Each structure stands twice: as C-alpha cells, then as structure tokens.
Image 1 (cartoon, helix red, strand yellow):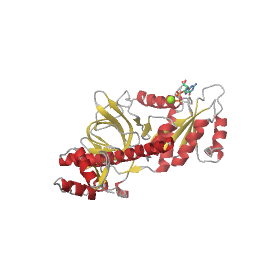
Image 2 (cartoon, helix red, strand yellow):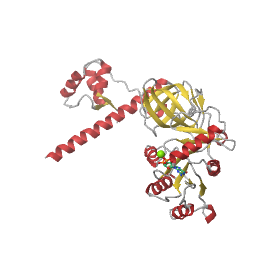
Image 3 (cartoon, rainbow, N blue to C red):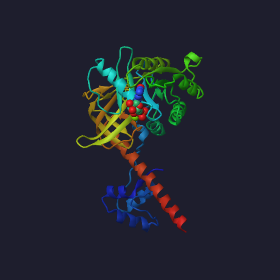
Image 4 (cartoon, protein in one colour):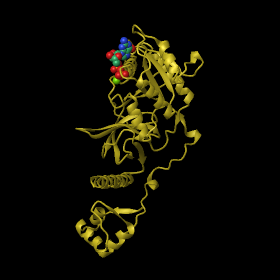
Length: 369
Ligand code: GDP
Ligand code: MG
C-alpha cells in the first residue's frame, strides 16, 4: 500500500512528468500524472533515470503524540461543554443571548463577547462552556466527523408549543451520542404556556422529570425576560457534577475545531476547543488536512492569551488552510512533523477523491451504454 504519485516522483527527480509516464509505458504500465505507483515500480523507473528510491519509512502514527491513558493523578476537574438544541423558534438563540448578557452585566471581566463559535461563562458556582452553534445539525455534523465535544445538551422547548419534530430529533441525537439532557421549558411568560404538557410529552420520549420519579432535570425559563437563567446554569452544573468531568492539562494539547473561516486580513482562523493538555503560543499542530503553528491566540472576549487549558475555546491564527468543524486538533513536537503529517493526509485525500472521480466516470460510461 506504500505508493508515490507520478507527479511527485517526477518532481523529486527533476524530470518532466511526461517523460516519466513514457518510461512507465515502456515498462508496460499505464499511469496518468495524478496516479500513484507502488514503491517497487517507482524504484524501477527511477533507476531508468539514474535514481535510487529510498524509503523514509514515514508513518503518521510515529509522529502523533502517543495517546496513552491519562494517569489518575494527572487529572483535574474541568468545566462542562454544553450545546443548546431544540425546535426552530423555541428560543435557542434567545437563551444563549440571555445567558451571555446576564453574565456580562453581572460584572464578568472582559465585557463584549466576540463571536468565535463558543464561549466561556464563569460563575462563583462553576464555569460552563457553551457551543455557539445551536441546533442538531452542527451537533450531528461534528459527530459524523467523530468529534464528541458536547457533555450536556440543554433542550429548549417552548411552553406554548410543546414537543415538535426537531425536539424529537434533538432527543434522538442526544441519546445516540449518550449525552445527558437538561430541559429548559422556555417562554413561560407567555399566555397559554403549559409546562406540564411539555413534561408529559417529553416523558413519552423517556425524559421523565425528577418530581415524577424520573431522573431528568427540568427548569422553567423565559429567555426573553431573562428569568430562570441562574437556575438553568445551576442545573447544568449539577448535571456536570454527576459526570465527573476531568482532563489532564499537562501534555500537548488535543481538541477539536469548532469553527473555522478565511479572514481577509488574518488568513485562516479557527476556534479550537481544547479538550486535553494545554495549548501554547508557538505550538505546532495538525488539524484535519492542514498543519500550522499558533501565531496568536484569543479568547472569547477578544483578549490575546498565551495558553489555553482543557475546556477553553480559543481562536487561533497560523493555520495553513481552513479546516472543518469537527476536525481533530493535535499538537505535535515541531512544524516539520506537522507538515509531514498534513502532507500525508492530503495525498491520501487526493487519492480518495480521484478514486471516487474515476468510479463516477466509469459508472456514467456504463450507464450511457
Ligand atoms: P431559535 O430559532 O430557537 O433560535 O429561537 P429564537 O431565540 O430566535 O426565538 C424565536 C422567537 O421567540 C423570537 O421572536 C423570540 O423573541 C421569541 N422568544 C424567545 N424566548 C422567548 C421567551 O422566553 N418568551 C417570549 N415571549 N418569547 C420568546
Ligand atoms: Mg436561532
């Protein structure tokens, strides 16, 4: 399975790809510039051009920081990471805003929050991290990429509307991911609000309230009027306690990309949610198909910081490309290693894309017959 692309081999020998393809043809091998040939074939054609092929033994695994289990004595408590889900118009955005506002007006240092895709709420009782992209689409997109970032889901249900399609979907997704749900019965200020109806309907989905003998936490809120906000934060922290969330801050950082984009002035920027270890200024890393080096880091208050520990979301500059939400982020020992891993991943991806393309071409060819 070790192979090299025709174009890469030609480049390394300093000859035209066309000449290499001719040599290959001479050996009875048909290959295009984008195809890969195995190392044995590469050695033979290289010899024809007076080169020897040396295997460098590159394997991505050798360079990734070994993922040993953390020792219990290295683990420290960490804040929970929360995603807000629920049916459209039931008040997800309003609840996020309300939480953010209540925390800022209560004198949290920093003032205006920046939109970086996640934010950190500090309180006397404990800290909570909120992912800023509500809805189950972001949640499932992340999970589809193998990223488990959320510890707790706040399920928002409007008390005047009850359980709807997307409420059910959110419940299913949370259950599938094994993430506990805290219910926020919202819009209790409205006429026609019927919190008991919400409890009944959600009980049918297995979310039986504590006061009915179940183990699901319910709270009543009005995101619009800002009531019940402290209570929901408290309930989330209560749920978090049960989960006993811990992380080891003393190792190279690992985490996931929460959001990334191309900024006109600053190039590729991405928000990393650090999940283990501590991310530091100057660290080399790989995320998805790209590598980079942390040139600058900002927290969700727009403040420049030098390091970020577990559960801290940070926006970083210094990416060589725009990764996707849900891509894993791993710090490695140096930039050279980071580059090699990213190159290997890109080659693999290109080969996969090409294989897909040629399959499609073949299929449409057969279909046209
Ligand atoms: P999302 O689609 O779930 O993000 O819902 P939004 O936060 O955008 O809210 C949808 C609508 O419901 C907006 O017009 C809000 O002002 C309104 N709304 C949200 N929360 C409340 C609430 O607690 N009480 C009342 N009366 N209206 C609310
Ligand atoms: Mg919204």
